[in-house]
Image (cartoon, rainbow, N blue to C red; front, side, top):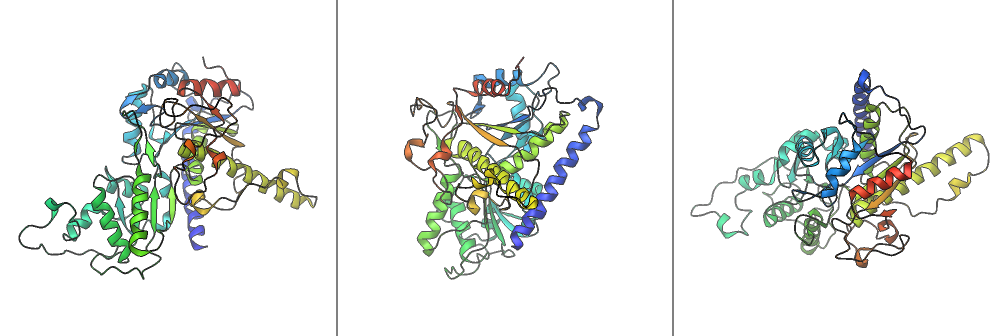
Length: 446
């Protein structure tokens, strides 16, 4: 219960910060326009790899798509947030990269990386954390609120006898002294590292010694210190014809090694990034902020999540949609009780399986806390990335389930529910996806 209270506190701080920033922007006369399309109000969530780019190469349809999404002054017509499971950079760098590739202005406030929701995990911010990944991981951790950060390189330098898989890294001649560090309190896995053998070895050392690699291993130290992981993608799409290993593959390796050595399952304090619900909760806050910057006074009612990965993008959007529907049912039940009447028919429809703590990803298990949550979230699958006609034939009937050839590519702690990998719509590319959304909403694209 203490962990849930801490998460709620962090979430309220994050919510206040986002809404406060939006209100400040909203005071500007240039952003005081009212929403001119009546009650129709929606937002767009774009995946990046496989939807907008392949590695460093823009997908041709993406540039034209974003030209249509901005007006003659370069202002977005609808709220847009980029939701990616990448996490090896700062939001500013990703925004600049997208601005260059898409030839429209993208602000850091529109970018959500896999690790962004860690801002709400304030109960870990004062702990000494070991961070794994690549890129400016120490800077990223500090930017998220973590105050005492140790990188894997810092750990291997402090304990020079630990990293010996690569013979060239083994100490030569005399054995260097151990510097020692204060014990590690938690492990944060940002993304796939460069040297897997080093990271796997040292993370196991930390988990099996209660955070102090100077001690002997002990499988009796269970459960181990907290582990928080961002980005569960098993595969992702770059320039190569076939998908490449993602951070999910590294997690599978770590989980297998831990169980092989100890006989116990590796436990996660939180799994963050698509397809976890907390990621979409955070994205919805950013969409709301964008809507207020546009001067919209009508709450965003529908979200459209555009992605290329059935297990990450489609599964996540559908899982969040289930969360939204459960929230509405809970709200209906509370209203029915307050009126002293019978059970609302909407509330009686609560036959969907309860989401696991892993699927919630640290989000509050209590539905209906937000009165202005969207009514639903639709998933749109494009064929320019992980999912494509070259590797798997599209179902002739959109109602048929897409199940990645019935092989579960999701994380170990998530349920394999084939219906959640079924997209609301299947289109060829992102341009067609946006045209479809505007047609659904009755908006002109001109």
